[in-house]
Image (cartoon, rainbow, N blue to C red):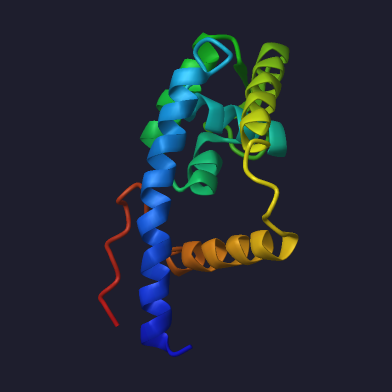
Amino acid sequence: MGPDARARRLMEVFDLVGPLYRKVFRRIEEETPVAGVGVGVRAVLDLLHRNGPLTVPQMSRAQALSRQFVQRMVNDALARGYAETRPNPAHRRSSLIALTPAGERAVRTVVAHEHAQLRRIGGDLTDAELDACVKVLGRMLDLFDDVDMDGTTPPAPPP
């Protein structure tokens, strides 16, 4: 497949990703099984669950979200007792954020609920198809690695 045909096909993927993201966002917000765990707090808790304690800038980069937004979600998680701050030996002014036992229970509950939802997808998808989907979406994400979500770096001129 040539570059133009591939670009047209990749636009089909973009056309699906946006509505999918918005619908998943809405469903998570409507059906969260744990009080106060909307999509933003859920993302923070899940990231901490998978990676251990992180700083807000680290979470921001990992999620391609602005630091300000991640900080608001962290503040919400802290206020609800789902996370706590810890001293950061590597950086005095940037605390580590860690899950509390309540946060661990909350994220496990939310992820189990989401897993139950995803089990409803028909069984005709193969491992190869899912591998291909992950590969395509990963390549598309890689294309935009240079995007600065905080707006602190001026955009590069077009090639």
